[in-house]
Amino acid sequence: MPTTVFNYKDGKLTTNDIQLEELVKQYSTPLYVYNNDHIIDNYNQFMKAFDNKCTVHYAMKANSNQAILKSLAVVGCGMDIVSGGELNRALSAGVDAKKIIFSGVAKTDDELSDALNVGILQINIESEAEIYQLNNVAKKLGKVAPVALRINPNVDAGTHDKISTGKKTDKFGIDIDLAISLYDKMITMKNIDPQGISIHIGSQLMSAEPFVASYKKVAELAEKLIKNNINLKRLDLGGGLGICYKTSDSAPDVNEYAKMVFDTVGHLNLDLHFEPGRWLVGNAGALIGKVENIKSNDLKTFILCDVGMNDLVRPTLYNSYHHILPLNEINEYINADLVGPVCESGDYLCKNRKIAKMSKGDYFAVLSAGAYGMTMANNYNSRVNPAEVLVVGNKSYLIRKRQNIDEIISRDIIPPVI
Image (cartoon, rainbow, N blue to C red; front, side, top):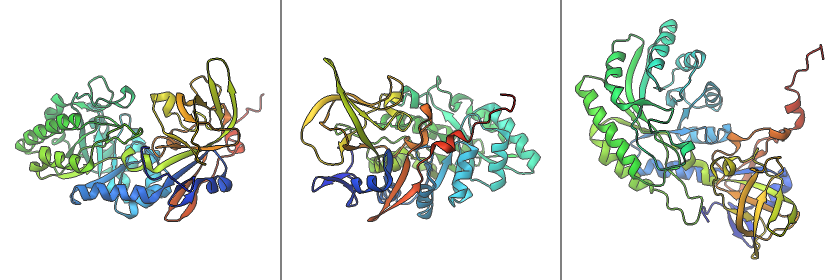
C-alpha cells in the first residue's frame, strides 16, 4: 500500500482513527477526504531536510481548496500559482503575497497587473515576448516587476509525456542557450528586475538523475550571470518529486534530494525556493465511492460505481494507477474493471486488476487522490462535483459542499428569442 495515512483498524478503513464509513454516512459519495496532519508533516519534513534554509511555495494546482492553502500558510508555506484565479484563491486563504510565485506560459495583462499590484515575490517569465509584455504592464502601473527566467534545460524528466516540462518539445520555459542574452536585455529595462532563475522539468519524477542534470545546468548559468554582474537573489528549483502510488514504487528520498541540491547549487549562496505540489498532498487524500452494481460476461467482470472520470480523470488521462481498498476489509479477490457512470469507455478507475470482491452497496477508497483530483474535476454528463472533507487530529470538517445540479443549470442563459 502506498501510504499509511489510510489503514485498517478492526476491519474498518480509517484515517487518524476516524472510520471513513462514518464520513460517508455524514456526507455521502463520491467524497474526497484529506488528512491535514499528513500534509503538514510532509511540509515539516521537507523543511527539515533543508535545515530550514529554503522557502516552499506549494504548487496549488495540485489541490487548491482554501482550507488546505490556509493550513499550509499558517506554518509558513508560500504558493506557486499559474493563473489569476489561483492568485485570488491564495490571497483569499490568507497567503502572504510576498510568498507567491507566478508561473505559466500565457499570462494575460490583467493577471500580470493584479500580481504586480498586490506585490508578489516573483513572476517567472516563460518566453522572450513575455519580458516585453510584462515590462509594458509594469511601466503603465509605475512598478518594477521582480522576475526570474524559467529555463528549459532540454532534460528528459523520464515521466509521463503529459507532465514533462523540461524538453525543447515542451511548451514551457526559455531555451537555456538564450538566457544570458535575455538577462542582459532585462537589466536595461527600467520596469524589470531580474532577481532569479527558475526551472521545473516535470511532475512525478521517480529518479534523481534528471534533477542533477538540470540543476548542474542552472548552476553553470548562474555562475555566468553573476560574472556578468546580474544581481541574482534566488534560485527557484521547481517541484516534481514523485510519490508512491504502488507498493512497488520507489520515490526519491527528500533528505537525499536536499543533499543533491546543496551539492549542485549550494556554493552559489543564493536563496533556495521550491514548488512541491503532489509531494505534499498526493498521499494525504482519498476519494470514496460506492458500488452501484456488478455485471459480468464471458470475458469481463465490471464493478459499476458512482465515481466517474469527472471526479478523478487521472486513470484515463495518464493511465495512472491508484490503490483501491474497500472501507470494510475484504479478503476475497476477483479480477475486474472498476468503472464509473460516465458515458465514455475511458471512464474507469482500474482495468483488469485483482481487486477486493465487492458487492452492491459496498464502499471503497481510491488512495493517493489528494493531488490532481478535485482540481481537475468537471461537470461532464451534468454530474455534480464531490464534497471535500478535511481530517484534523481526531475531527473532520466539511471544506467544500457537494455541488448541486441547480448550481450547474443556473449558469446557462436561454436567449429570449428561443
